[in-house]
Image (tube, rainbow, N blue to C red; front, side, top):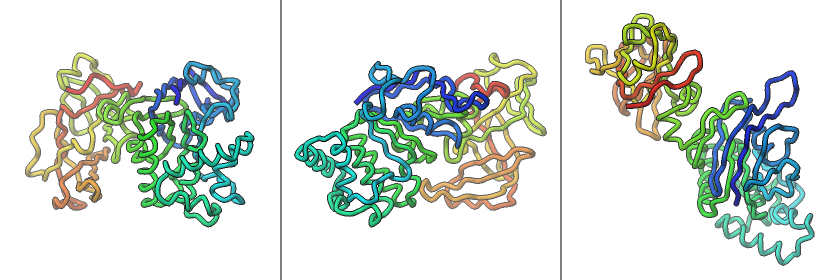
Length: 371
């Protein structure tokens, strides 16, 4: 295991295009899993390839336990990589895929078989049977199990996962995710897990790093990122559904004025803003209070009248996500499962001031804290 650090790492593929990585600083502590999320093109896979030594010609430092790895080839970094497309050798049995690493390094058959035996025990029931078959005869989930076993058999100091479950159906993705989590928890292998799936990121990551345009916007436990987002991008990206962001507000008379309604500024924020400042206000869908217009919820910050556009049941969480339109803004509010709400209903959305987030419209940075 190892502690991995990226120090001001910048990677460009062309001098005429924006950098794929732009001054990235990130620490993955010994035995920790950091899940990396972000939109397509944000630099997630490039980050992984730089860590693995598959991409060079960068500025900054990549450190393994304080050792600069700039000139260390991938084979000397003691890493195990698991890819989206499995990358198994199709003409080898599963056992051959696991042993190939040792054959290249002329390691004895006895040591090779012992490592495969230990890996089979770790991977659990049925794995030994997969080693007797070629990849073409295995399902997607089985192939990915073999690919994970192939990475594990090397006894890596660092595990790198590049969207390994994205080709699996929902059921297999959940089963394989549980296996990966069990593996990471048991051995506390330092790991970087790149994914588009926030459920995977939340389930597997001790820390979550949110990327945009080659930069790491924020790193932390999921609760911190949800409750204290560093900026409007993190707030609007993370979560299912993500935070409601009400844009085009302007500070005036201790309130934020929108077209046709306003939000009172809580005392904790008033001293931090100035008249005429453009702000964005955020509120998590689960914190927004919804009621019929005739029975509006009593809140201190704002009351918004809206029309329901769609009701989306969330069976897993036993909640309904109600999508509404209020003037030029669209919001989502969570209501109890089974509550009668229909498209076309006129409702009131209450915004409790203790759940409001404020962001500067120009810099996107969060202003003040939560009460």
